[in-house]
Image 1 (cartoon, rainbow, N blue to C red):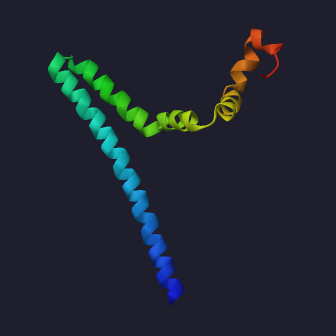
Image 2 (image 1 turned 30 degrees about the vertical axis):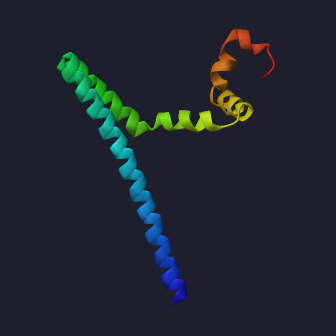
Image 3 (image 1 turned 90 degrees about the vertical axis):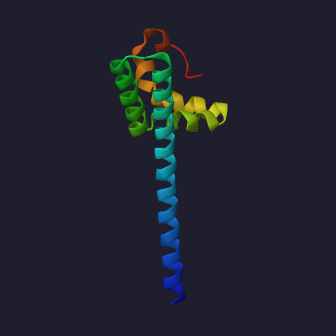
Length: 104
């Protein structure tokens, strides 16, 4: 019975954590769109440009590419450079200037 109660409380806690993370992420997106809406109204931005900006915000939100950037910025410099060199290894291999250079 105790194991059941512990399992249930763990599952409930994990689910509430996931939901709060999703809510936080959605709130950030809504805030960005609201800011874009304010800018659009204040500076009379064309509807086409406004729609492009909102599409871009939603796309960035769906890809979460900025999360990688924030994560990498929190890493120590040396580890960050190692990770980035692995990510961009293919590009470095194709540029002639970098081919005869050491990894450092």
